[in-house]
Image (cartoon, rainbow, N blue to C red):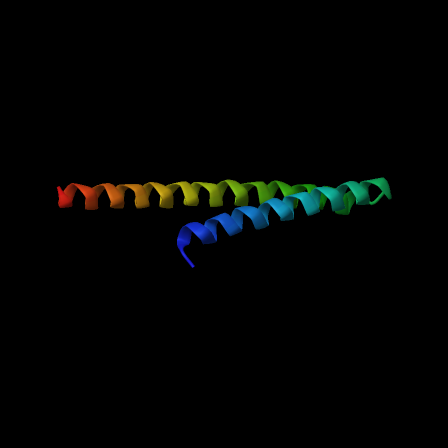
Amino acid sequence: MSARKTYLIAIALFTLLFMALILLGSWLLSIESRQYAVACFLFAFGAVFGQVGSLALYAREAARDKARLAAQGARRV
């Protein structure tokens, strides 16, 4: 599996984790369990950092691949 594909999968997993934690936090808040709801919301905030980090790594890998292809094209000319 390529690094780009790994980063895309990580973005998808962090997105699903974020949605699940927000849903769980909302449900916990509705049943008056404030401490666990706040914890879920904080972990969801952490999942957003995971998303952004994975997106940054994906963008970096895509730029590296583009630069690598440009360098190979310049050598062939």
